[in-house]
Each structure stands twice: as structure tokens, then as C-alpha cells.
Length: 411
Image (cartoon, rainbow, N blue to C red):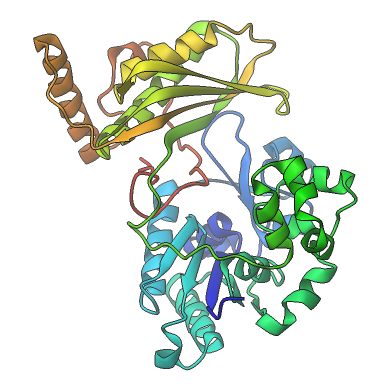
């Protein structure tokens, strides 16, 4: 086991807590934060609402059925982004080794900071105090020898908890811990493990590596090590992330739609958002993927195609996505659409050979400059203008980072 000391900080009911802090009349009351639109989905709920069974991902009507006095709050993504960025600046006062896992979670490697601040527990309490003082919200903190165990520890006491997992206690804690509690083991993997009669971390750590590899392929060894609490992955500071593998965006629609023209209008908007971010960070991709979730919420599909040359042009991304869509007969109205660009090439700036392509490049650059200054989609492709679609607040994706290509600016 590495003799590192890693903190995982998880903000408690982050969106809801920020709203309750900003609006004193909401404190102590059951609230649910949603995006804008006619049929919003709950993105997070306060602990008062959670006590009544209101959960993330529920439709508003479901939440109100469980909690009739539930207060619905339209989310403010700019506010959450700002708060998250400022919280990560607090972390950097204790160590430069800070990795944002999502908008409300971060890891800190404080191995080299212990002599300066005294102990990991002292650092944790100072962080909690500063966040509480500056933003009047709480967080749960886990302290452990690595990222995997630190995240596990932060989940053990919520809200406003502090849990320390010492190296000598790892085996005891993991022995009867459900394997599904480990970050990286999702529902499908957990279900497969149960079919193999593996339910706890202890059982996973003792499982024959060859058996896991036959079932899961190259991640089999990784799963075995996770069951033992072993994780050598580093805390990766801002700007030092591994090379980005894809650029994507998805959006839950305001209402279920089955009109092909309306679906294409949303695809064009998503293509513009993906293309704009790809151009901003000078990457281009050859593989375009389309993801569709149907109105029943459970049925979905994804398909991709690879084109002949790398692109970051919104219209090319859009045409390819439409081409994918035309190969599928939609079984029911659509609830969510997503587009991603992968198989990336970095540092792609090159002057086009033909004059028409040069004009297109200059027009695209001008459009990007306006949108970066005044907000996404202020200037966009003319095909978007005739529609009835509203921009609204898009849910911040799980891959959000305070800086870099995964940062989605909200307007």
C-alpha cells in the first residue's frame, strides 16, 4: 500500500445547498433543483426532500407525489460553476495536487502538505470550516491512502462527515463492504459479480484473477486489486489531465418529441456545442457518435460512424449525426439526445487549400468569438432560427472540470 495521503471532498446535495444558502427562505425545507423546461427532471434534492424519498433523476410529478410540499427551484448553472471553481481554489491553498472529479467532488493529494499543516485531519477540518464560512454549505470528506479508498470513505458519513481509513484498517473495512460501493463498479458490473457469487469487496479481492479476466477482459485484474483496496492512480492536477479522448454533449429535452424536423433541430444545436468546444481546444475527430434515449426513460441506443478525415466543423458533425439517425426507425418519442466526437487529433490548426473552405473557417472563427464573449448560441447556424426550441439551462455533465476542454460554459 502506498504511503500517500489522499482526501476526497464531496459537497453535500450541492445544487440544492447552494440554492438554500443563497435564498434563506428555502433553508430547512424540501427543495428539488431542476433544469428549465416544461417537463423537467430533478437534478438534485435537499436532504429534507431526500428524507421523503425524493431522488435525483425523478420526474417532478414523482417527487411531488412523495412530498406534496416539495419546492421546485430552477437551477442556475453559472452559480454552481462559480461556487465549484472557488471551492477548488480553497483546496489549492493546501496542495497544488487537486483533481476535480466532477462539479461537486475533488481529490487532493496532501502527502507533501502534512508537515506544513500538521495532520490530514487538521487539513480536512480547515477545508470544511472555510467552505462553511465562505459559502454556508457543507461537505463530506474521506481520508485514505489512495483515491479509491478516499472516495469510499467520504460516502460513509453524510452529510457533513469526516471518515479516515488507515492502511492497517483497509482489510477489515473492505471484508464485508458491498463491492458495488467502490467507485468504478457500476450496476451492470455489480450484477455480473453477483452472478459469479461475488458480493463483497473481500470476496472480490480474493477471487482468482484468471476467472475475473475471463469474464471482464483486461479490467479483471483491476477489479481484483480494487477489492483489495489497491489503487495507484495519481491525483492529476488541473491542466495535467490525460489527453482528452472525446468531446460530447447531451441534453434532456423539454418534452418528448417524434417530429423528425424537430429532432434534427436539436441535433444541430448539440453539434454546434460539440464543434465549438472542439475548435476552442484545437482538436478534431473522425468518429461521431449519436445517443438516443426514448420517452419510457429505460430504452436507449447509441451508434457511431467514422468519417474519412478529422473534423471539428459543426455542420459536418451534424450531417454525420443525421446520417446515423436515418439508419434507425425510431420506436417511440425521444426524451434525450447526445452527440460526441472521438478518435481525436490534437493541434489541428491548418489553413484550408480551397477559398470556399477558408471563408467557412473565418466565418466559424468569427461566430465562435461572438459566442465566447456573449454566451453559447448567441450567433448560430441559420437552420436553428425557425424552430421553437428554447435554450434554457442544460444539466452540467458529470465530466465537467473547472478548466479545460471538459468545462461547458453555461449561459
